[in-house]
Image 1: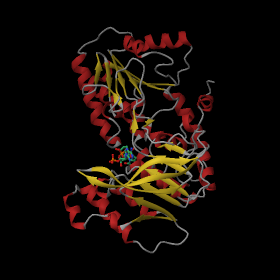
Image 2: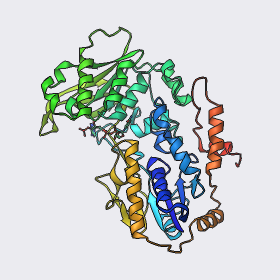
Image 3: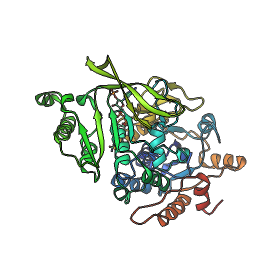
Length: 434
Ligand code: NAP
């Protein structure tokens, strides 16, 4: 029997478990740990609430979770409840699948002013992550600025721009829906420090902006390179450019629309405000060898809310070597130290789609199989259970999660798939074991 601990129950964690089952069948026990009492990580708290079809992938993870050899071990935090060293004593292999849940910093003056958020915090807020449920983003000003030209910037812009009706079928949490109902934001400015050819937005996500009920995208045609330059781009980016060109051609917006304005060649230089954010100072840029270089021309965008969607980083764990520059665990193809591995965003940084994590999971299991060819005699599950009991750790199992799930589905407002619990205590209460 091989004993594998996976830390993190998001896509990378469950794909790794699936791969371990394929590799060893009944000869493996996999325990999937999570800090929260609820599984699926990014699927629950990262994927946009109006992208329910993407969230449906959780059903595949559920199949893995319900096999006899896989356990969900929720409400257990590495570094608080037990250490990495202890986990390594108990299991043949410990795989860190903790994702990249922390915001990268802009590194600008004023960034700590109230009203400035990173996307992990802001997305976590509207998705009901307990850590960010109390965020209270200010929505009383007519302008919000989003920094970054990736898909998360699009998610955030879309959620801010949608009407209440458009959010009805989503699982956005009640506190966010109530705040957005009060929102005075009519202008959403998306700052890209480089140009249209350098965006990291994909066409499906960009195209959604054109279908909004009461909002429309705005692109300044002067920012677009000559159309024949698009030919050299890869297919996805070429499609995205086609969309930006169509946005630039739309000159007849309805007067009361919310605008989603693309401000390209625009690098934020300072967040302005006295006691709370009042605007952003921006420097016009030009491209030099693919890099954004300041031109010296600056301007100010008055705004009451700033959200930096500039990428994420893995949260460090005591005792685990960390690559500061890459914002992930220091590793060689997923190997950190004997018996200690990482996978997914914790291995390679926050890039790619959810599906990219599947081959990642299979690759790490191949490495574990090569490194640990036989039974190493470690205690595995019974060893952890004894330690959890001795420490009074209140472990939440997958069957407990199913009760939480049922309660969330039962509490859904009309047309919505669920109303999430946003407090750990309430989640545990719903298991009936509080
Ligand atoms: P991302 O794709 O890496 O985009 C980050 C953006 O921030 C880039 O445009 C980058 O510009 C900009 N940026 C970085 N540092 C900056 C700074 N200091 N000042 C100004 N701009 C800065 O990251 P993401 O949007 O967080 O997405 C993470 C991953 O999740 C991606 O793989 C994404 O495709 C995926 N995702 C997918 C979906 C979906 O499929 N529906 C939804 C959400 C996220 P430069 O290029 O100039 O560095």
